[in-house]
Amino acid sequence: MDCGPDHKSFCRLNAMHLLMIGTPYELVVRNSRVSEKTLRFWVSRFNECGIDGLIHRPGAGRPRILEHDEIKTKILPVVDDPSLADQTHWTAKKLCGWLKENLVAQLSYRTVVRYLHEHDYKRKIPRPMPEPPDRDAWEDKRDAFAGVLLELLEDKGCEVFFGDEAGFEGDPRPRQKWVKRGSRPTVGYYGGHVRQNVVGAVNPSDGQLVSLIVSHNDTEVFQAFLDTMADEVPDQGKPIWLVLDNASWHHSKSLEWHHIKPLYLPPYSPDFNPIERLWQHLKSHFLAGYITRRSEELADKLEASIKQLLSQPETVQSVCRTHLSLIHI
Image 1 (cartoon, rainbow, N blue to C red):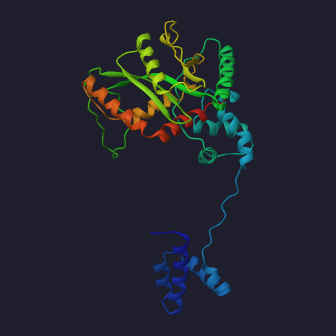
Image 2 (cartoon, helix red, strand yellow; image 1 turned 90 degrees about the horizontal axis):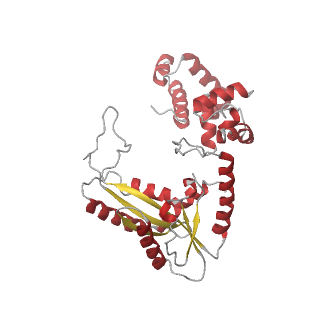
Image 3 (cartoon, rainbow, N blue to C red; image 1 turned 30 degrees about the vertical axis):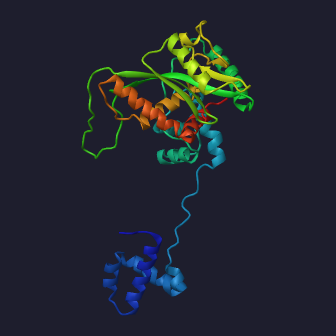
């Protein structure tokens, strides 16, 4: 049954019409599905204000407990940094309990969740990261690197690529899927280990992606990638930077960098590299559910998927820029 404002107004007007044409009071109550007290109130409103007295006007609701500025100053800082409340992480229920104990205002679970949604907060599974042995020194290195990276990204006189290797399996772990309640989803599983690797570099500013499908990773393979990148990103008189992690083959003294300049990430900082998000996008949007026992078939599928991704530079830009926007630099 529709209970919207227009329907409620219609029910009231219809009840008055039935009474005016002589319909017994009891039948009008039954037809309108309201109590006699409610019907008498409608009649009173009609006699006092006419038809306008029967128009349903939703109320403004209860006033907000906290205004947006108060949420920003009292709640969001603790959400962003749980250590301020001697916590390591928050669930909505735990946050709600802490706020009830530490704020004068009493907030319900639903109110806390609504406030977080209003400020564009979402539930996400945190990415596990190894804990650095010296956190203060690690944070200093990250801050220094972030400053350098920001200058390069804002410099129109150079190009910045982000490079990394990724592995793709022909028998991947099952991912979540939507199924009807009560049913149990299944996925094919061979049990073998079919794997291909990709070496790549992406420029978030224009969506250019350079990639090479390989069977393994070492200095020789990475040199082949540098040769490929030097051909696809020719020297046009401005610096070409390649941001990389600290894999041993990235530091080999035998490497020929051509016109490419390496810039190494600080330790324990994969969150500074947007190509990792691009690899995840490739796995979830192009290779999800793909299963094969043959390395050649996996390589062909991977090559076709990368070609399709190359035809969508705006997608590459969007994925990588979204990642970079999360880096507080």
